[in-house]
Length: 257
Ligand code: GLN
Image (cartoon, rainbow, N blue to C red; front, side):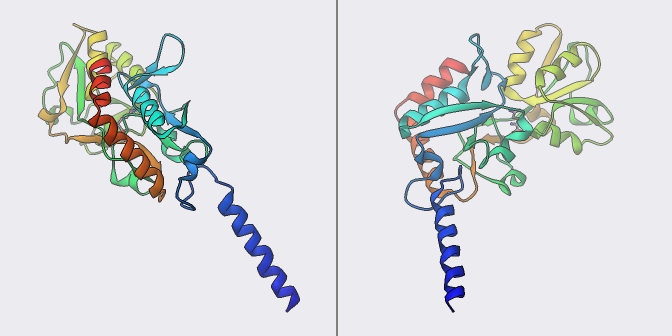
């Protein structure tokens, strides 16, 4: 009996230690999210997606998403620390290396199995970049083509559904665009705003085609959050709402997009 009591007691101690250790993003113990309780919000991004995130002249991640998450951090009274990593590592890093991720990330059912999302903060659609002299202009024209995409993105997933098409995957969308310019791929599928930036950088060499004309659907960007941390979701959604109401969100759109 004494022995059994000892086992029960030590189990209780371990459980309470686990609850109190505040492991990144896992918590719903107490009223404040564990992700915020240390005063630091660690944010994953992939700074290869202008104008939402890119490496600025000072070598630090800059862009709309970076400014937005810092404004959210200010609202919540926490310091924002950015971790720059590959896009396809962002979801799995949440809860271990990072608290949340912001990276022009589209809300998808598949991602929702691993993470929760904030309220959406921006709409986009996939665009198709092609050489200026290309005759690709419709979905059917993409059949059997080699299409450059950024690994693990919604553009990448779209290519899986195009009959006979091959996805040439890159960790950086800009490398796909460079291969388009060099004639190594027939087209690049990438989100609307980065497509606009890339097309401008190669004006006259590549064309930027609206994916709505290819039947691609509108996508919603949101901040990816640890699954089940309802306090963090409420805090971030509340801050986002306030920034929309007080004009900060619109100022950031004007500045960056
Ligand atoms: N919106 C796309 C996605 O979520 C691409 C995001 C990105 O490349 N940063 O997959």
